[in-house]
Figure (cartoon, rainbow, N blue to C red):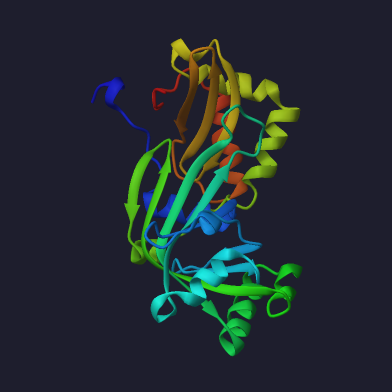
Length: 262
């Protein structure tokens, strides 16, 4: 296989979608185009949580136009889409490195259903804003019909069943801290890693963009535009010790052919 057509191994679309969901990220909800009004075309929830099966629990202020739209919808269900933006942990010209869209049906939860939904979120992600449920805030549930993930690896559809079977990346909860530390305190390490970039990208400003069990991602900010490059690990890693070993290998190896040209 030629170098030009080689793509380093990357997590599956379902794994990438699950990782974005677990990381949380910036959220927005859009009602279906046939049901949207100017007052509820796009709204930001107070809190959002995507469950392992792809369903999402959302918390909105009682007076949010989307809440009223959902209450008035036929059969109590409103078509809608939850958009999650995966933002890089270091300041970049283009900070969004991935998007996850979950399309399905929105409905208001009241009474015992709302309390059960809040308790389910509390077990996974305690948050004081959940105390507002029923006291100025309304709980909505998004039942998924389809999902789409878009990032440097491409744009892919993900079935809710695939999402539920996938595992989030083992480093997704620590990635932000590690990459910020790399950016602020170890520019020398970034420079060593940049030796593995395609030659035509080595003159740009190299930034740590992401890491997962299969490799490291670098963002090259150049005059003509930005380029994302994946550098593959020799083997999948699952622990900080294994990750440290792979990073040391990359820093000490003068050549690495497994790169994806940006």
